[in-house]
Length: 178
Image 1 (cartoon, helix red, strand yellow):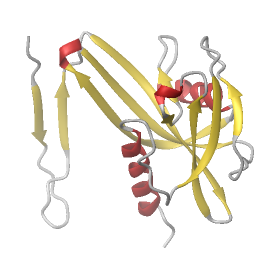
Image 2 (cartoon, rainbow, N blue to C red):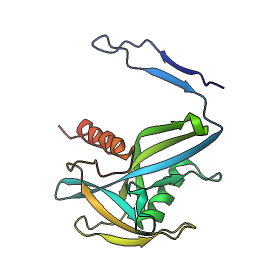
Image 3 (tube, helix red, strand yellow):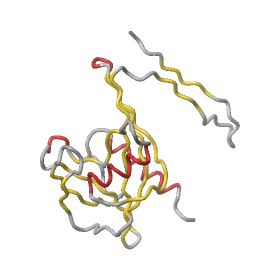
């Protein structure tokens, strides 16, 4: 069974004559997971940071950004706020949507769409010290959390998550006050 993958240009007149708008149509795999994730954006003395965590219980998962499955009874925004709290202990508020990452493994008939948002902590976060937290979901994983300066290389992150940090870096550049 093959899936149809279409990219359609929606001819737009953008200054410079570039066509920038397009639509992607893609059928999800039979085993599809819809996930939500966050860049927890912290600032200290004008420098930008984001929060990551590593499971001390499951270290093979690597260093990650907060995120997880969108449950049947919640929307993406609710899932992001819940996942940030579960995985970092940080109470947060949503700033804006950032982008998405799509994974597909046709051999396993599996796909995964992850929607990422930028969130800010409600209360100040110490950007210089690590903290431990017990995941508030059913897994009760022991997590180590810390802040990473945005200008630090992100190759240490789990697969696909460096792309999200790159989107955030671009967002920061695009939104700098001029």
